View 1 (cartoon, rainbow, N blue to C red):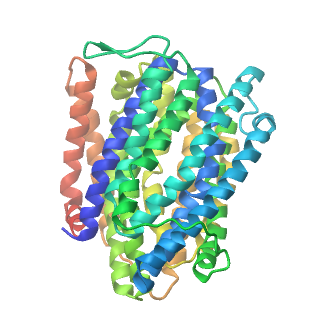
View 2 (tube, helix red, strand yellow; view 1 turned 30 degrees about the horizontal axis):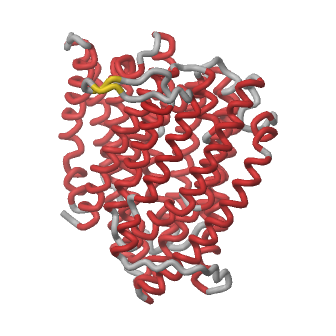
View 3 (cartoon, helix red, strand yellow; view 1 turned 90 degrees about the horizontal axis):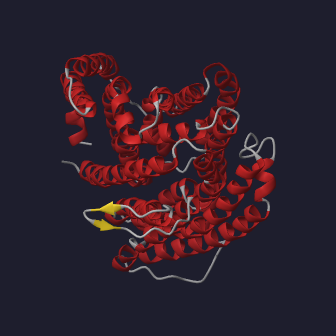
Length: 509
Protein backbone atom coordinates (compact mmCIF):
# COMPACT_ATOMS: atom_id res chain seq x y z
CA UNK A 1 0.00 0.00 0.00
CA UNK A 2 1.09 3.56 -0.63
CA UNK A 3 1.64 5.97 2.27
CA UNK A 4 -1.53 7.88 1.34
CA UNK A 5 -3.53 4.65 1.31
CA UNK A 6 -2.24 3.74 4.77
CA UNK A 7 -3.12 7.19 6.08
CA UNK A 8 -6.55 6.99 4.46
CA UNK A 9 -7.22 3.58 6.01
CA UNK A 10 -6.13 4.87 9.41
CA UNK A 11 -8.58 7.73 9.04
CA UNK A 12 -11.31 5.36 7.86
CA UNK A 13 -10.90 3.23 10.98
CA UNK A 14 -11.17 6.12 13.40
CA UNK A 15 -13.74 8.05 11.41
CA UNK A 16 -15.81 4.84 11.28
CA UNK A 17 -15.55 4.57 15.05
CA UNK A 18 -16.62 8.19 15.36
CA UNK A 19 -19.58 7.65 13.04
CA UNK A 20 -20.67 4.58 15.00
CA UNK A 21 -20.47 6.59 18.21
CA UNK A 22 -22.23 9.54 16.55
CA UNK A 23 -25.10 7.36 15.40
CA UNK A 24 -25.33 5.84 18.90
CA UNK A 25 -25.41 9.35 20.36
CA UNK A 26 -28.19 10.44 18.03
CA UNK A 27 -30.19 7.28 18.69
CA UNK A 28 -29.93 7.87 22.45
CA UNK A 29 -30.99 11.49 22.02
CA UNK A 30 -33.79 10.62 19.60
CA UNK A 31 -35.27 8.05 21.96
CA UNK A 32 -35.19 10.58 24.79
CA UNK A 33 -36.54 13.62 22.99
CA UNK A 34 -38.19 12.32 19.77
CA UNK A 35 -39.04 14.82 17.02
CA UNK A 36 -39.73 17.45 19.66
CA UNK A 37 -39.62 21.23 19.90
CA UNK A 38 -36.92 20.93 22.59
CA UNK A 39 -34.62 18.92 20.33
CA UNK A 40 -35.30 21.26 17.42
CA UNK A 41 -34.11 24.10 19.68
CA UNK A 42 -30.91 22.22 20.57
CA UNK A 43 -30.09 21.53 16.92
CA UNK A 44 -30.74 25.11 15.86
CA UNK A 45 -28.70 26.49 18.78
CA UNK A 46 -25.55 24.85 17.36
CA UNK A 47 -25.59 26.86 14.14
CA UNK A 48 -23.94 30.16 15.09
CA UNK A 49 -21.33 28.61 17.45
CA UNK A 50 -20.51 26.10 14.69
CA UNK A 51 -20.22 29.00 12.25
CA UNK A 52 -17.79 30.80 14.55
CA UNK A 53 -15.68 27.67 15.00
CA UNK A 54 -15.65 26.95 11.27
CA UNK A 55 -14.57 30.50 10.47
CA UNK A 56 -11.86 30.92 13.09
CA UNK A 57 -10.12 27.58 13.55
CA UNK A 58 -12.14 24.88 11.83
CA UNK A 59 -12.55 24.56 8.10
CA UNK A 60 -11.41 28.10 7.35
CA UNK A 61 -8.17 28.65 9.21
CA UNK A 62 -7.09 25.01 9.30
CA UNK A 63 -7.20 24.52 5.52
CA UNK A 64 -5.60 27.92 4.90
CA UNK A 65 -2.97 27.05 7.52
CA UNK A 66 -1.86 23.55 6.45
CA UNK A 67 -0.39 24.49 3.02
CA UNK A 68 1.70 27.32 4.49
CA UNK A 69 2.75 25.27 7.52
CA UNK A 70 3.71 22.33 5.26
CA UNK A 71 5.78 24.69 3.12
CA UNK A 72 7.52 26.15 6.19
CA UNK A 73 8.25 22.64 7.48
CA UNK A 74 9.72 21.66 4.11
CA UNK A 75 11.79 24.80 3.58
CA UNK A 76 12.65 26.09 7.09
CA UNK A 77 12.27 23.25 9.61
CA UNK A 78 10.04 22.33 12.53
CA UNK A 79 11.14 25.02 15.00
CA UNK A 80 10.17 27.85 12.66
CA UNK A 81 6.93 26.03 11.84
CA UNK A 82 5.97 25.82 15.52
CA UNK A 83 6.70 29.52 15.95
CA UNK A 84 4.24 30.19 13.13
CA UNK A 85 1.73 27.83 14.78
CA UNK A 86 1.94 29.72 18.09
CA UNK A 87 1.29 33.05 16.45
CA UNK A 88 -1.71 31.77 14.51
CA UNK A 89 -3.15 29.92 17.55
CA UNK A 90 -2.86 33.01 19.75
CA UNK A 91 -4.56 35.13 17.14
CA UNK A 92 -7.33 32.58 16.62
CA UNK A 93 -8.15 32.35 20.32
CA UNK A 94 -8.28 36.12 20.80
CA UNK A 95 -10.54 36.63 17.80
CA UNK A 96 -12.80 33.73 18.83
CA UNK A 97 -13.12 35.13 22.35
CA UNK A 98 -14.10 38.57 21.08
CA UNK A 99 -16.63 37.14 18.62
CA UNK A 100 -18.10 34.83 21.28
CA UNK A 101 -18.77 37.81 23.54
CA UNK A 102 -20.55 39.61 20.69
CA UNK A 103 -22.66 36.57 19.78
CA UNK A 104 -23.64 36.01 23.41
CA UNK A 105 -24.69 39.65 23.78
CA UNK A 106 -26.81 39.68 20.61
CA UNK A 107 -28.07 36.09 20.73
CA UNK A 108 -31.75 36.99 21.26
CA UNK A 109 -32.18 39.29 18.24
CA UNK A 110 -30.13 36.92 16.05
CA UNK A 111 -32.55 34.09 16.89
CA UNK A 112 -35.78 36.10 16.51
CA UNK A 113 -34.88 38.19 13.47
CA UNK A 114 -36.89 37.29 10.36
CA UNK A 115 -33.67 36.45 8.51
CA UNK A 116 -32.07 34.96 11.60
CA UNK A 117 -31.70 31.50 13.11
CA UNK A 118 -35.26 30.44 13.95
CA UNK A 119 -37.90 33.07 13.16
CA UNK A 120 -40.62 30.42 12.87
CA UNK A 121 -40.26 29.16 16.46
CA UNK A 122 -42.52 30.29 19.29
CA UNK A 123 -41.24 32.71 21.97
CA UNK A 124 -40.43 30.05 24.59
CA UNK A 125 -38.65 27.88 22.06
CA UNK A 126 -36.63 30.88 20.86
CA UNK A 127 -35.65 31.68 24.48
CA UNK A 128 -34.40 28.12 24.88
CA UNK A 129 -32.33 28.46 21.69
CA UNK A 130 -30.72 31.62 23.11
CA UNK A 131 -29.73 29.91 26.38
CA UNK A 132 -28.32 26.84 24.64
CA UNK A 133 -26.42 28.95 22.10
CA UNK A 134 -24.64 30.91 24.82
CA UNK A 135 -23.54 27.71 26.54
CA UNK A 136 -22.34 26.27 23.24
CA UNK A 137 -19.93 29.19 22.83
CA UNK A 138 -17.82 27.79 25.71
CA UNK A 139 -17.10 24.70 23.62
CA UNK A 140 -16.32 26.95 20.65
CA UNK A 141 -13.55 28.68 22.63
CA UNK A 142 -11.95 25.31 23.38
CA UNK A 143 -12.23 24.26 19.74
CA UNK A 144 -10.52 27.48 18.64
CA UNK A 145 -7.29 25.89 19.88
CA UNK A 146 -8.09 22.21 19.38
CA UNK A 147 -8.97 22.64 15.70
CA UNK A 148 -5.62 24.27 15.00
CA UNK A 149 -3.78 21.55 16.92
CA UNK A 150 -5.33 19.05 14.48
CA UNK A 151 -4.03 21.09 11.54
CA UNK A 152 -0.56 21.41 13.10
CA UNK A 153 -0.21 17.68 13.68
CA UNK A 154 -1.52 16.83 10.19
CA UNK A 155 1.00 19.21 8.65
CA UNK A 156 3.65 17.16 10.46
CA UNK A 157 2.16 14.07 8.72
CA UNK A 158 0.85 12.79 12.08
CA UNK A 159 -2.76 11.66 11.73
CA UNK A 160 -3.38 9.21 14.61
CA UNK A 161 -4.29 11.58 17.46
CA UNK A 162 -6.24 14.02 15.25
CA UNK A 163 -8.17 11.00 13.93
CA UNK A 164 -8.95 9.86 17.49
CA UNK A 165 -10.08 13.30 18.67
CA UNK A 166 -13.58 13.31 17.09
CA UNK A 167 -14.43 9.98 18.73
CA UNK A 168 -13.31 11.27 22.13
CA UNK A 169 -15.44 14.37 21.56
CA UNK A 170 -18.45 12.19 20.76
CA UNK A 171 -17.90 10.17 23.94
CA UNK A 172 -18.26 13.38 25.92
CA UNK A 173 -21.53 14.08 24.12
CA UNK A 174 -22.77 10.54 24.87
CA UNK A 175 -22.00 11.10 28.54
CA UNK A 176 -24.16 14.21 28.41
CA UNK A 177 -26.99 12.28 26.72
CA UNK A 178 -26.79 9.23 29.01
CA UNK A 179 -26.01 10.83 32.37
CA UNK A 180 -26.57 14.59 32.38
CA UNK A 181 -29.79 14.89 30.36
CA UNK A 182 -32.11 12.03 31.51
CA UNK A 183 -34.55 12.30 34.38
CA UNK A 184 -33.97 8.63 35.20
CA UNK A 185 -30.71 6.69 34.98
CA UNK A 186 -30.01 4.07 32.31
CA UNK A 187 -29.21 0.50 33.29
CA UNK A 188 -26.28 -0.96 31.38
CA UNK A 189 -24.93 -4.47 32.11
CA UNK A 190 -26.71 -4.48 35.46
CA UNK A 191 -25.28 -1.10 36.50
CA UNK A 192 -27.58 1.91 36.75
CA UNK A 193 -26.01 5.15 35.60
CA UNK A 194 -26.76 8.23 37.68
CA UNK A 195 -29.09 10.84 36.16
CA UNK A 196 -28.75 14.57 36.68
CA UNK A 197 -32.09 15.47 35.07
CA UNK A 198 -30.77 18.50 33.18
CA UNK A 199 -32.85 17.81 30.08
CA UNK A 200 -31.64 19.37 26.86
CA UNK A 201 -29.13 21.48 28.83
CA UNK A 202 -27.34 18.24 29.68
CA UNK A 203 -26.68 17.74 25.98
CA UNK A 204 -24.86 21.08 25.83
CA UNK A 205 -22.75 20.29 28.90
CA UNK A 206 -21.83 17.05 27.13
CA UNK A 207 -20.66 19.11 24.15
CA UNK A 208 -18.43 21.20 26.42
CA UNK A 209 -16.99 18.09 28.07
CA UNK A 210 -16.36 16.54 24.65
CA UNK A 211 -14.52 19.66 23.48
CA UNK A 212 -12.18 19.35 26.47
CA UNK A 213 -11.54 15.70 25.58
CA UNK A 214 -10.95 16.70 21.93
CA UNK A 215 -8.12 19.02 22.93
CA UNK A 216 -6.67 16.82 25.66
CA UNK A 217 -6.17 13.72 23.50
CA UNK A 218 -3.96 15.68 21.08
CA UNK A 219 -1.58 17.19 23.64
CA UNK A 220 0.80 14.15 23.59
CA UNK A 221 1.26 14.78 19.86
CA UNK A 222 2.44 18.32 20.55
CA UNK A 223 4.90 16.95 23.11
CA UNK A 224 6.20 14.33 20.65
CA UNK A 225 6.93 16.95 18.00
CA UNK A 226 8.57 19.28 20.55
CA UNK A 227 6.03 22.05 20.39
CA UNK A 228 6.84 25.20 22.37
CA UNK A 229 4.21 27.86 22.89
CA UNK A 230 5.28 31.46 22.30
CA UNK A 231 3.14 34.34 23.65
CA UNK A 232 3.41 36.32 20.41
CA UNK A 233 1.23 37.40 17.51
CA UNK A 234 3.65 38.63 14.84
CA UNK A 235 0.91 39.76 12.47
CA UNK A 236 3.44 41.50 10.25
CA UNK A 237 5.79 38.52 9.85
CA UNK A 238 5.88 37.13 6.27
CA UNK A 239 4.56 33.64 7.06
CA UNK A 240 1.69 34.94 9.17
CA UNK A 241 0.78 37.32 6.36
CA UNK A 242 0.78 34.38 3.92
CA UNK A 243 -1.69 32.53 6.15
CA UNK A 244 -3.88 35.62 6.50
CA UNK A 245 -3.79 36.22 2.74
CA UNK A 246 -5.20 32.74 2.20
CA UNK A 247 -7.54 33.09 5.15
CA UNK A 248 -9.49 36.08 3.81
CA UNK A 249 -11.10 34.29 0.85
CA UNK A 250 -11.31 31.05 2.85
CA UNK A 251 -13.25 32.84 5.60
CA UNK A 252 -15.83 33.98 3.08
CA UNK A 253 -15.95 30.49 1.57
CA UNK A 254 -16.70 28.84 4.91
CA UNK A 255 -19.12 31.64 5.77
CA UNK A 256 -21.04 30.77 2.60
CA UNK A 257 -21.06 27.07 3.55
CA UNK A 258 -22.29 27.81 7.06
CA UNK A 259 -24.91 30.21 5.72
CA UNK A 260 -26.42 27.21 3.98
CA UNK A 261 -27.04 25.57 7.36
CA UNK A 262 -28.63 28.77 8.61
CA UNK A 263 -30.83 29.01 5.52
CA UNK A 264 -31.75 25.33 5.87
CA UNK A 265 -32.95 25.70 9.45
CA UNK A 266 -34.59 29.04 8.70
CA UNK A 267 -36.71 27.35 6.05
CA UNK A 268 -37.31 24.23 8.16
CA UNK A 269 -38.46 26.29 11.14
CA UNK A 270 -41.45 27.33 8.99
CA UNK A 271 -42.48 23.70 8.47
CA UNK A 272 -44.12 21.24 10.87
CA UNK A 273 -42.50 20.32 14.19
CA UNK A 274 -39.65 17.87 13.70
CA UNK A 275 -38.52 19.15 10.29
CA UNK A 276 -35.31 20.66 11.70
CA UNK A 277 -34.41 17.44 13.51
CA UNK A 278 -35.22 15.30 10.45
CA UNK A 279 -32.84 17.42 8.36
CA UNK A 280 -30.18 17.21 11.08
CA UNK A 281 -30.44 13.42 11.21
CA UNK A 282 -30.62 13.03 7.44
CA UNK A 283 -27.48 15.12 7.10
CA UNK A 284 -25.80 13.00 9.78
CA UNK A 285 -26.63 9.80 7.90
CA UNK A 286 -25.30 11.20 4.62
CA UNK A 287 -22.15 12.30 6.44
CA UNK A 288 -21.28 8.69 7.28
CA UNK A 289 -20.34 7.65 3.72
CA UNK A 290 -19.14 11.15 2.87
CA UNK A 291 -16.74 11.16 5.79
CA UNK A 292 -15.50 7.61 5.27
CA UNK A 293 -14.95 8.11 1.53
CA UNK A 294 -14.53 11.83 0.85
CA UNK A 295 -13.24 13.44 4.02
CA UNK A 296 -10.72 10.70 4.81
CA UNK A 297 -9.07 10.90 1.40
CA UNK A 298 -9.33 14.70 1.25
CA UNK A 299 -7.74 15.05 4.69
CA UNK A 300 -4.96 12.61 3.85
CA UNK A 301 -3.94 14.18 0.55
CA UNK A 302 -3.93 17.91 1.41
CA UNK A 303 -0.43 17.93 2.97
CA UNK A 304 0.81 15.73 0.10
CA UNK A 305 -0.71 17.97 -2.57
CA UNK A 306 0.85 20.97 -0.81
CA UNK A 307 4.26 19.28 -0.95
CA UNK A 308 3.82 18.43 -4.66
CA UNK A 309 2.96 22.06 -5.40
CA UNK A 310 5.87 23.33 -3.31
CA UNK A 311 8.20 21.16 -5.43
CA UNK A 312 6.28 21.94 -8.66
CA UNK A 313 5.82 18.21 -9.25
CA UNK A 314 2.70 18.45 -11.42
CA UNK A 315 2.79 14.83 -12.56
CA UNK A 316 2.46 13.60 -8.98
CA UNK A 317 -0.15 16.28 -8.28
CA UNK A 318 -2.29 15.14 -11.23
CA UNK A 319 -1.97 11.45 -10.37
CA UNK A 320 -3.03 12.04 -6.76
CA UNK A 321 -6.13 14.03 -7.70
CA UNK A 322 -7.09 11.68 -10.55
CA UNK A 323 -6.92 8.56 -8.40
CA UNK A 324 -8.99 10.19 -5.67
CA UNK A 325 -11.71 11.25 -8.12
CA UNK A 326 -11.92 7.79 -9.70
CA UNK A 327 -12.33 6.21 -6.27
CA UNK A 328 -15.05 8.73 -5.35
CA UNK A 329 -17.08 8.05 -8.49
CA UNK A 330 -16.75 4.29 -8.18
CA UNK A 331 -17.76 4.10 -4.51
CA UNK A 332 -20.27 6.88 -3.90
CA UNK A 333 -22.80 6.14 -6.65
CA UNK A 334 -23.37 2.47 -5.67
CA UNK A 335 -23.28 3.29 -1.94
CA UNK A 336 -25.91 6.01 -2.38
CA UNK A 337 -28.11 3.56 -4.33
CA UNK A 338 -27.80 0.88 -1.63
CA UNK A 339 -28.68 3.29 1.17
CA UNK A 340 -31.58 4.88 -0.71
CA UNK A 341 -33.06 1.45 -1.45
CA UNK A 342 -32.54 -0.26 1.89
CA UNK A 343 -32.45 2.29 4.68
CA UNK A 344 -36.05 2.35 5.99
CA UNK A 345 -36.04 -0.73 8.31
CA UNK A 346 -32.78 0.46 9.81
CA UNK A 347 -34.30 3.88 10.55
CA UNK A 348 -37.29 2.23 12.24
CA UNK A 349 -35.00 0.08 14.37
CA UNK A 350 -32.62 2.91 15.32
CA UNK A 351 -34.89 5.87 15.98
CA UNK A 352 -38.25 4.35 16.85
CA UNK A 353 -40.24 7.15 15.19
CA UNK A 354 -43.82 6.60 14.07
CA UNK A 355 -44.52 5.86 10.39
CA UNK A 356 -44.90 9.52 9.45
CA UNK A 357 -41.66 10.50 11.20
CA UNK A 358 -39.76 7.58 9.67
CA UNK A 359 -41.01 8.39 6.16
CA UNK A 360 -40.03 12.04 6.62
CA UNK A 361 -36.52 11.08 7.70
CA UNK A 362 -36.22 8.52 4.87
CA UNK A 363 -37.10 10.98 2.12
CA UNK A 364 -34.94 13.71 3.64
CA UNK A 365 -32.01 11.27 3.69
CA UNK A 366 -32.64 10.21 0.10
CA UNK A 367 -32.54 13.86 -0.90
CA UNK A 368 -29.12 14.21 0.72
CA UNK A 369 -27.86 10.98 -0.91
CA UNK A 370 -28.41 12.46 -4.37
CA UNK A 371 -25.46 14.76 -3.67
CA UNK A 372 -23.08 12.24 -2.08
CA UNK A 373 -20.75 12.18 -5.09
CA UNK A 374 -20.75 15.98 -5.38
CA UNK A 375 -19.88 16.40 -1.70
CA UNK A 376 -16.99 13.94 -1.96
CA UNK A 377 -15.55 15.46 -5.13
CA UNK A 378 -15.74 18.86 -3.44
CA UNK A 379 -13.47 17.52 -0.66
CA UNK A 380 -10.62 17.09 -3.16
CA UNK A 381 -11.36 19.77 -5.75
CA UNK A 382 -11.37 22.53 -3.13
CA UNK A 383 -8.21 21.18 -1.48
CA UNK A 384 -6.50 21.10 -4.89
CA UNK A 385 -6.75 24.88 -4.96
CA UNK A 386 -5.78 25.39 -1.32
CA UNK A 387 -2.71 23.22 -1.88
CA UNK A 388 -1.75 25.75 -4.57
CA UNK A 389 -2.41 28.53 -2.02
CA UNK A 390 -5.28 29.76 -4.20
CA UNK A 391 -8.37 30.52 -2.10
CA UNK A 392 -10.19 32.76 -4.59
CA UNK A 393 -11.65 30.12 -6.87
CA UNK A 394 -13.20 28.07 -4.02
CA UNK A 395 -14.70 31.35 -2.81
CA UNK A 396 -16.28 31.95 -6.21
CA UNK A 397 -17.79 28.46 -6.29
CA UNK A 398 -19.07 28.75 -2.70
CA UNK A 399 -20.79 32.04 -3.49
CA UNK A 400 -22.54 30.38 -6.42
CA UNK A 401 -23.58 27.55 -4.09
CA UNK A 402 -25.30 29.93 -1.65
CA UNK A 403 -27.14 31.72 -4.45
CA UNK A 404 -28.44 28.46 -5.90
CA UNK A 405 -29.40 27.20 -2.44
CA UNK A 406 -31.43 30.28 -1.55
CA UNK A 407 -33.22 30.54 -4.90
CA UNK A 408 -33.91 26.83 -5.36
CA UNK A 409 -34.52 26.01 -1.71
CA UNK A 410 -37.04 28.81 -1.37
CA UNK A 411 -39.13 27.09 -4.03
CA UNK A 412 -38.61 23.39 -3.31
CA UNK A 413 -39.36 23.59 0.41
CA UNK A 414 -42.83 24.91 -0.42
CA UNK A 415 -43.44 22.07 -2.87
CA UNK A 416 -41.70 19.11 -1.21
CA UNK A 417 -41.27 20.25 2.40
CA UNK A 418 -38.14 19.09 4.24
CA UNK A 419 -37.09 16.63 1.46
CA UNK A 420 -37.08 19.60 -0.91
CA UNK A 421 -34.48 21.27 1.32
CA UNK A 422 -32.22 18.20 1.33
CA UNK A 423 -32.55 17.87 -2.45
CA UNK A 424 -31.57 21.52 -2.79
CA UNK A 425 -28.45 20.80 -0.75
CA UNK A 426 -27.46 18.02 -3.16
CA UNK A 427 -27.99 20.12 -6.27
CA UNK A 428 -26.14 23.16 -4.92
CA UNK A 429 -23.07 21.29 -3.62
CA UNK A 430 -22.78 19.16 -6.76
CA UNK A 431 -22.84 22.30 -8.89
CA UNK A 432 -20.13 23.82 -6.69
CA UNK A 433 -17.92 20.75 -7.18
CA UNK A 434 -18.40 20.83 -10.96
CA UNK A 435 -17.53 24.54 -11.15
CA UNK A 436 -14.31 23.96 -9.23
CA UNK A 437 -13.32 21.11 -11.51
CA UNK A 438 -13.95 23.24 -14.56
CA UNK A 439 -11.68 25.93 -13.10
CA UNK A 440 -9.04 23.34 -12.15
CA UNK A 441 -8.92 21.92 -15.68
CA UNK A 442 -8.30 25.38 -17.10
CA UNK A 443 -4.84 25.37 -15.55
CA UNK A 444 -2.43 24.05 -18.24
CA UNK A 445 -0.41 21.97 -15.78
CA UNK A 446 -3.48 20.03 -14.65
CA UNK A 447 -4.60 17.03 -16.70
CA UNK A 448 -7.01 14.51 -15.16
CA UNK A 449 -8.72 11.60 -16.92
CA UNK A 450 -11.27 9.23 -15.38
CA UNK A 451 -11.74 6.88 -18.36
CA UNK A 452 -14.74 4.58 -18.10
CA UNK A 453 -15.15 4.95 -14.34
CA UNK A 454 -18.41 6.94 -14.47
CA UNK A 455 -20.14 4.51 -16.85
CA UNK A 456 -19.15 1.46 -14.81
CA UNK A 457 -20.07 3.16 -11.52
CA UNK A 458 -23.57 3.95 -12.84
CA UNK A 459 -23.99 0.32 -13.87
CA UNK A 460 -22.77 -0.76 -10.45
CA UNK A 461 -25.25 1.62 -8.77
CA UNK A 462 -28.19 0.17 -10.71
CA UNK A 463 -27.11 -3.38 -9.87
CA UNK A 464 -26.47 -2.58 -6.20
CA UNK A 465 -29.80 -0.80 -5.72
CA UNK A 466 -31.77 -3.55 -7.47
CA UNK A 467 -30.10 -6.34 -5.49
CA UNK A 468 -30.66 -4.48 -2.20
CA UNK A 469 -34.36 -3.96 -2.94
CA UNK A 470 -34.87 -7.55 -4.14
CA UNK A 471 -33.02 -9.03 -1.17
CA UNK A 472 -35.18 -7.06 1.25
CA UNK A 473 -38.32 -8.48 -0.34
CA UNK A 474 -36.95 -12.01 -0.30
CA UNK A 475 -35.45 -12.04 3.19
CA UNK A 476 -38.16 -12.10 5.84
CA UNK A 477 -36.43 -11.94 9.22
CA UNK A 478 -37.21 -11.01 12.79
CA UNK A 479 -36.31 -8.34 13.52
CA UNK A 480 -36.68 -6.91 9.97
CA UNK A 481 -33.44 -4.95 10.36
CA UNK A 482 -31.45 -8.18 9.95
CA UNK A 483 -32.92 -8.74 6.48
CA UNK A 484 -32.35 -5.07 5.72
CA UNK A 485 -28.68 -5.25 6.61
CA UNK A 486 -28.25 -8.52 4.69
CA UNK A 487 -29.85 -6.89 1.65
CA UNK A 488 -27.47 -3.92 1.83
CA UNK A 489 -24.47 -6.24 2.15
CA UNK A 490 -25.70 -8.15 -0.93
CA UNK A 491 -26.07 -4.86 -2.79
CA UNK A 492 -22.55 -3.86 -1.81
CA UNK A 493 -21.17 -7.14 -3.15
CA UNK A 494 -23.12 -6.70 -6.39
CA UNK A 495 -21.30 -3.46 -7.17
CA UNK A 496 -17.78 -4.91 -6.83
CA UNK A 497 -17.40 -6.44 -10.32
CA UNK A 498 -18.16 -3.07 -11.88
CA UNK A 499 -15.67 -1.00 -9.85
CA UNK A 500 -12.95 -3.51 -8.98
CA UNK A 501 -10.26 -1.59 -10.86
CA UNK A 502 -10.99 1.52 -8.74
CA UNK A 503 -10.74 -0.58 -5.56
CA UNK A 504 -7.23 -1.49 -6.72
CA UNK A 505 -6.51 2.19 -7.40
CA UNK A 506 -7.49 2.93 -3.78
CA UNK A 507 -4.72 0.61 -2.58
CA UNK A 508 -2.19 2.55 -4.68
CA UNK A 509 -3.51 5.98 -3.82
